[in-house]
Every structure is written in structure tokens, then in C-alpha cells.
Image (cartoon, rainbow, N blue to C red; front, side, top):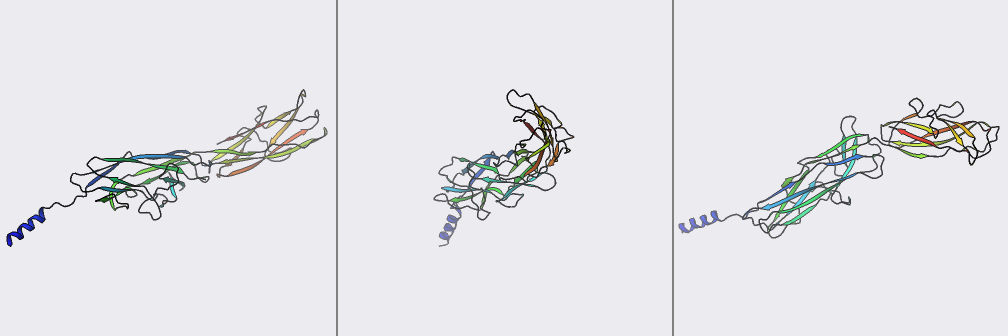
Length: 322
């Protein structure tokens, strides 16, 4: 009996344990650069990053498959998956909203098994032999619009080895359908963008004088010009008649064989003595961008209407410098 007891113990000690050894790695993880961002655009800039993964089981491993969960957690800046933010380098503190997606159509936000209410890619791999199993996934990124409050500058967010990682769940008969807690690989990366200075002329209405008698003096009319510039961007607005005069003094031409020219003066304040509005550093109108449209009145004065009866017109060029 004693001999049998010893043999039984020896058999238990030398019976090999079932192995669950598998090695996974990721490669080609690159920074995501969304490039130059126009904060006034209704369409958010996009970019993407494709990385590869490889899994190999070891000799003697009894696994039939594994389930990989690819997690990208909270933004380092916002502390959340939705929204995700980049921060401006330097002061004052500013943010730029963006999002990471699982699909090229950018409809499925890329989350993490550790972030409640989010989804993430799960990949089931069959490991039937020792041949490595490979694949790739693409992270799609897009700036969230509108971003009219964004200040020009360089923005960045980061994902560390603690927030961007791959977990593994092994299965003996087939790949599981749930995530595991074993970290198989880590994929830290950064997201960056540069908000550019931008100005748009959002509106410009024609100046139309009412019909006037030849005895008319100091005829006045006005319109408005709308300008939107990126937040905290200084700009100037210049006006130049078609004759190239930089002091805002133009002439309107008649029709057909009429050679008369009707002079007019552009100004930023009303009346014959209004402040001249031209296209030099001394007579432009200045502003500072807010990300939304600012409307400016433009006044025109005709000193005299003593010209051949006709319809007169001219074209003024609006130049915004920033």
C-alpha cells in the first residue's frame, strides 16, 4: 500500500498542467495629426491611424482561441470619452473638441471596457496551430464642429499605457465573447491639431442711392459688411473702389456713351464729414475676432448729383487682413 501511495503521488506531480500561454503585440502605432483646423468651418478636419496586431500561442498550448478587446479610454484633457478634448500649448487654458471612432464613417465612438456605456472593437481569433495570427485596426479621428471659440495655436491630447491597451480572454474550445483582464499589449499615442487664423467675409450688401435731382447735394446711402474671424485674431477691413484709390474715393460710371463720372466717398461714420474708410493702415477699420460675425456699417456720400441723368455704378473691393 505504501508503494502504491508513492506512485500515485509521483503520477500527480508529473502530469503536465494545461497551458494557456499566448503572446500578443501591436505595431505601427503612430501619432494622429489632424493638421490645420479652420475653426470657422462647418466641416471638421479628419485623420486616421492604422496599427497592426499579432498573436501567437506557444508549443503545447491547449487554447483553441482568444478574444481581444482594444481599449481607448478617457482623454487626458477632458477625463472622458465623450467629449474628448485637446489642450492648447501654453496659457491661457483652451481646449479643442474632437472624437475617435471605430469606423471610417465616424459613427461609432471608440471606447473602453473600463468606461461604462462605451463600445470598442472586439476581435475573436482562432489559434489552431503555432502560426501567428495577424490583423489591423484603424482609429478614425475628427474635429467636432462648431469650434468657433477655439483660439489659434497648437493643441494636443495623449493616451498612455494605462488608457490605450489590449486585453485578452482565452478559450479552451472556442474564442470567448467577453473581455478578459489580462493585458496583452499597450498602444500609447497622441492626438494633435493646429488651429489656424482665419477670417471670412460673411455678408456684403450693395449700397444703393435713391433717385436724385440734379440739384441734389451730399447724397448719402449705406450698407453693411459682415466679417467673422477666429477667436482672438486681430484684423483690419479695407475698402478700395475700382479706380484703385486707397482713401476710399471712387467714381461711378454711367451707361452706354455717357462719359460722366460721379464721385463718391466711403466712410465708417455717416455724413459728409464721416471718417474716411480706405485701404491703408491709417484709414482701415480694425477688429478682434470672436469666432462669430461682426457687422460693420459702410457709408457713401455723393457731393453733387449735377450729372447727366443715368444709372451710375461702381464696384468696391473688400480686403480683410489678419
